[in-house]
Length: 271
Image 1: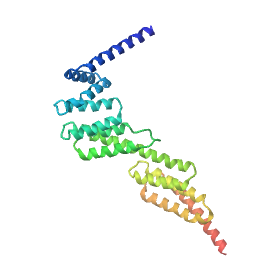
Image 2: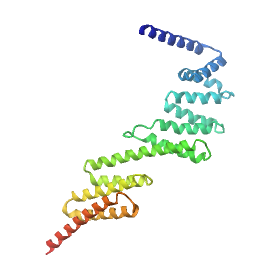
Image 3: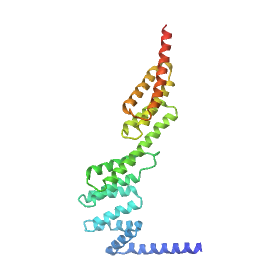
Image 4: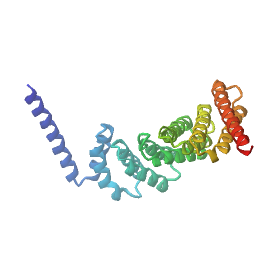
């Protein structure tokens, strides 16, 4: 039974390919265009794309050219050829800048970069490009119905960049590179000032500087513990109602005890 089904599928596929080959060989360009549009509507984008590509140079300057260009660009998009889709969306805007579809093409160009955004541990160049192009779209078309979706995509992309930066800072901390961790978490706060996790990041700055001080040579400890106190005070100024305040106070007390111990030792030494 399985072999019969397989044979049927192969036969149907062969028939479809044979029919498409006949369309390709046809010298009737109107017929080719009708078939390309038919394949497009049937979501057979690979067939439609090939026919549109053949017709492309023949239709330049013709009334149908804009529609063919539009569908040709979308064929690449639906086939997930993001680089080609981006290139064609861009070209459409350049060729038809006053078209009612130009706004859509600008949005779709930005969207192709969003679709290329990789998982968080990989390079995020396309994520950054998606943010840039979406922001440009918002600035250029403030009344567009696509503004809400564009804003949501920017938020998702920024969340991914934030997570990537957080993981990098966390790795420094887990590896015991506490100074690098403190700097990385500070940078994370500066790059994402509106983050819901700002308080947690600031606490990590405090913890990192504290452990950096604890593991320092004696001559460096006092100045580095004083840095922890500065960070604790900054936390209190920024987040006076924070639920993490008790944890900050714990590190502040530990640090003050260390500072007193160092100062007492210095007094003994001078005496």
